Image (cartoon, rainbow, N blue to C red; front, side, top):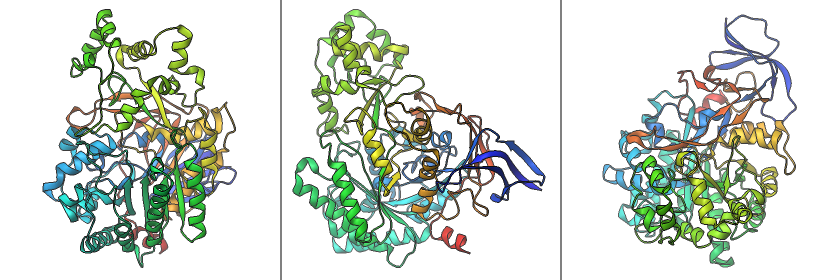
Amino acid sequence: MLDLVIRGGKLFDGTGAAPSEGDIAIKDGVIAKIGTITGEAVREIDARGQIVTPGFVDIHTHYDGQASWDAELRPSIDHGVTTAVMGNCGVGFAPVRESDHDKLIKLMEGVEDIPGTALHEGLTWDWESFPDYLDALEKMPRTIDIAAMMPHDPLRVYVMGDRAVFSQHATKDDIAEMRRLTREALEAGAIGFATGRSDVHKTADGDWTPSSEATRDELTGIAKAFDGLGFGVVQAVSDFNLERGEADFDEEWSIVADYAKASGRPFSFSLMQRDFAPDQWLKLINLSEKLKEEGVDARMQVAPRAIGVFLGFNCTFHPFMGYPTYKTIADLPLAERVARMKDPEFKARILSEKTDKLSGPGSSIPPLADLLMEHIEMVAEKFFQIGNPPDYEQPAENSLASRARAENKPLMEIIYDTLLERDGKELIYLPLYNYTELNYDNVLKMMEHPQALYGLSDGGAHVGTVCDASMPTYMITHWTRDRTRGRKLDLPTVVRMLTGAQADYLGMSDRGYLKEGLKADINIIDLDILQMEPPHMEQDLPAGGQRLLQGARGYTATIVAGDVVMEDGKLTGAKPGRLYRAGREQAVAAE
C-alpha cells in the first residue's frame, strides 16, 4: 500500500527539462516511482491540469530566532518553500553566552528589523554552543526543513566579547578559536559559514555590526575551518565600498575573494543594482567570472524583483515619522492616529513642517532614511501603490510623484492622503535596489547569468518593511506568465532555479528533483489561478509583535517528506519538517 499517489500532473523535474505528464508514488517519505502508477494508496491527489514541481529551496532566510519557537515558518510555507537555510549575512543567535543575549537581540533587531520584544519573549535560549543550538532546533517538529549556517557576528562576540562590538581587530588566538568553533559547528551539521560587511547594517543601538570590518586575516583564518571537509558553503553580503572610491572597492572585493578561496567551498554573495552606483553590478559580475576562472565555485545571489520596502503607518518606516507634530501621536494606536490625521487642522500643521533627522548616534535607523527624505521629490518617482493583485514592475507614470503633478497637488499631501487609505493600512512600495531604470530588464540579465542563484528572500526578517518570502510565487507568476514590459523566462528554467539548482549549490543530494529515491518534497500548483495576495500586517509574533505577511492562492498542495503540510492555502497541522544536518546528511545520501 502506497502512502500517496499524485495523479496525472505535468511534471517539472527540477533539471530544466521540458515537462512530462505522469503519476508520482510516495512511500515512507520518498518518491517510490514516477510514471504510470497502478498500485493502491492511502490517499490520491488528482493533479490533472496542474503542474507538479519539487519543493522550493530558499538559500537566504533569517528564521534563526523564529525557528526556536515557531513550527509553521510562515510566510515561506505559504509560497511552496520546503527547505529554508538561515544564518545568512553573519547574524544569528549561536554561539552565545547568557550575558550576551541582549547584544544579539539588538543586533538582529537592528540588522533584520525583527521586534526586540518578540525576540525577548520568543527565544528559548536553551543553548550556548552552536551544536547546542542545532540540538535545540532538532527537538521541534515543524512544517518544513531548515538548515543553519554558522554566523560570524555571534561567533565574534562569543570569542572576543566587547572587543567585537567595538570593531577591534581579532588576534591570532581569537582567529584560531573562531576557526575551531566553526569547525565544531560544521561537524555538528552547520551547512556553512556566513559573514556580513554592509555599511547599511546596524544594531538597534546604532552600532556597526561586529563582523562588518573584519580583516582579511580573520576571514581567511576562519574559512580554513573547511579544510578536509567535503561539504558546506560560504556566504557574504557587502556594499563593496564603491561610494568610497575605486581603491576601496577593489580592496573590499579582494578581501571577500580571498575569504572564498581560503574556504575551498562554493561561495555566494548578494548582487543588486544600486541607484548611487548603477554599474557596480556589472563590475561584480565580471569579478565573479574571474573568481570562477581561478577555481572558486563563485555564485551571485539575485532577487527576481526589486529589493524594496513598504512604507506605512503600521510599518517600521514612513515619510512622516520624523515630523514634529506626527511624533506627538506616534505612540497612539493606529485607529487613533488615523482619526487625528484626518482632522484638517492637524493635517495642515504636519504639512507645514519639515522632518527632523532620524539617523545618528544611538539610532538604529540608517543614514539612508535621512538621505531619502532629503531627496523626497526624486525618491517619490519610485513611490507606488502595490495594488491587488500586487504589481512590482510599474511604469513611471504610476508613481505618486507623477500623480501629484497630474493632480497639481503638493507631493507630501498626496503621500499623506495615500497612507490614510484603507483606514491607515495602505502601503507605499519603494523599490530601493534593482529598479534604477524603472523596469526589470537588468534583473533579467542577472537571473540569466550562469553563476546566478535565486536568493535574497530574507524570509523571517525585515518584518516591518519587507515580505520578500513571496518571491518563489513571483518567480513563477511574473516571469513565466504575467510580465508585459519585456521578455519572460520559460517555466522549466524557473522551476530549476527554485529547486534543483539550489539543492546542487548546497550539496543537498536528497532533494530538489522529482526523481525516484529522493525525498518527497513536492508542490502541486494550479498555474491558472496562482497569484500572490497583497502584503498585510498581522500581530502574531510573541509579545504582540507585528509582521508583514503575504499569502498566495493556487498551491493545491505542498508536501514535505510525503506529508501534505499545506492544502488549498491552509495549513494541515502536519509537521514532518526537521533540521538538515550537513555532512551527516550527505553521508547518508551517499550510502
